[in-house]
Length: 354
Image (cartoon, rainbow, N blue to C red; front, side):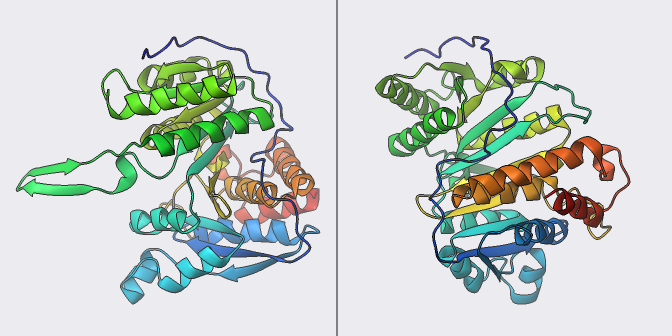
């Protein structure tokens, strides 16, 4: 079992790609959407996404849920049972952000929808200053295990341990999803990220399983040590398309990619389960600007577009992405992108474009 070469490949930037494809077709009944704003700017950008969705000719019903720091302070639990039940029963969920209680909120919410895949697109947009204007990447991140399995302990005072869990079943499932996603969204290039040269048993199993999937599907692929891949992504992101990766690697590498395209305020994400799904921006609660009304709603609105794709509303999802791209190119823009517009003003401009 070798680590494989880190070969440069060509990727044509395609602005018409869907952020998430392969969801269920539209149903005649109303789709119930759980809305959990959470903490900080989550409470500001989530309503923006709902406003955009409400402006579309789709049959959605919104049900609110509470979670996060304020709920923890008031009730003693960051994720009430009522909220988890709402998310489990809904067709999909929009989640904003969590603060200090993030591990107690987002991981259980992802579990509530049965999420095994975290999909994080990172694209550069016309009109915006970007470190790497040719970036068009999608990170397909395993979402159930790795170091985020939550198995930590203190074996004696001053000595703690963390157990990393990797299974063949979960590795196969995320690899199959990643290759299918690449095919359905027009990406020719798939890279399997790993650190099997050091974590020989855990990442060795992840790599071996993903390679086996590629062989079974008769798909070309590259492999890359995740640290070397980080360097190559900074220098030549245009050489890569879909990156299939373990949990922690996907978290770190997607944030790195955000820096290439203009910041975390531009990155949406989808947490996909067999039936249910949860959609959230990659950015956190941003307490430094919370309450000022200047948070960039783009990532949250683009997450809503991924929700539409998941529910089978591909045409409407494309309209939302086109509207966001038009506003990013011509303005108004929030301060993180060099402008002085408010969250409300940017949201209104997106709705107007629709």
